[in-house]
Image (cartoon, rainbow, N blue to C red; front, side, top):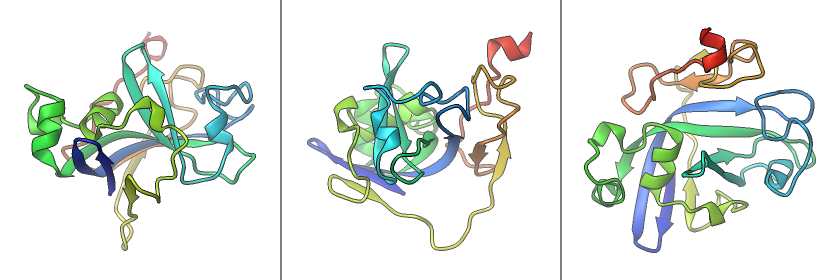
Length: 179
């Protein structure tokens, strides 16, 4: 579970879909593939911190840094189900059905109310609350969604999801992979 207590209130989600990304020279789909930049510097920092970036000029996407400091990685939060603060999530995403409130990385950040400026935050400190399930969850894995540069996502089957969970986004192959 991940909660974010924004100035207008708290929303919490159950993560149902994530994608993993390695770093420098290891993973062409990663923002860190070509090395450290001002944009991706958080990915080289302490694990458990938030790497936030702007995608397509309109969506904030959220990643959890997952490797020791100095190495780069991220786990993109792709999909979730709102478990607390649903009325506030609905206000942030008006006209959207409950299933789609956090189903996709841009939708997820908007439902939570996490701004781009929260990048670098420690997810174990206020205004965040991150809890890992006590028991292992049964998950499925497959190619990442819409990733180019790694055989259309097939070289790195690092997309993980909870089968049957309504927060899982639809799978989309990268255009080049579909050709």
